[in-house]
Image (cartoon, rainbow, N blue to C red):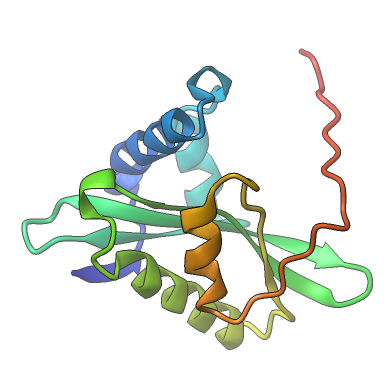
Length: 150
């Protein structure tokens, strides 16, 4: 298994993994982003979205981690983990751990103060996985979303 930065040629496979995650989270209809939108965010001249992939020896993309930059007025630059996805047939093979270590290394290299993300409260397997990294689970904040209609 190779963990590496995503390439333009990986965008379709990454998008496929995003669709798998949406299905798992019981919200496939909420995916409106396209491979083209993802590609633009990842590969512009000054990207603010970063992605890594887990690639098998047969060059199949079986996992991805997608992050972006945030700014905390209290802490300064931080990294937000938007998604960590491993194909269902490849779970429990250490791929998520390899991807997390890549993200952590990236955050350290760039002096980000912390990595933050959300996990659904019913996703106990993901919560258990994240606990291996000595995280702080914080349920005191409420998610707020303001939809902007076109």
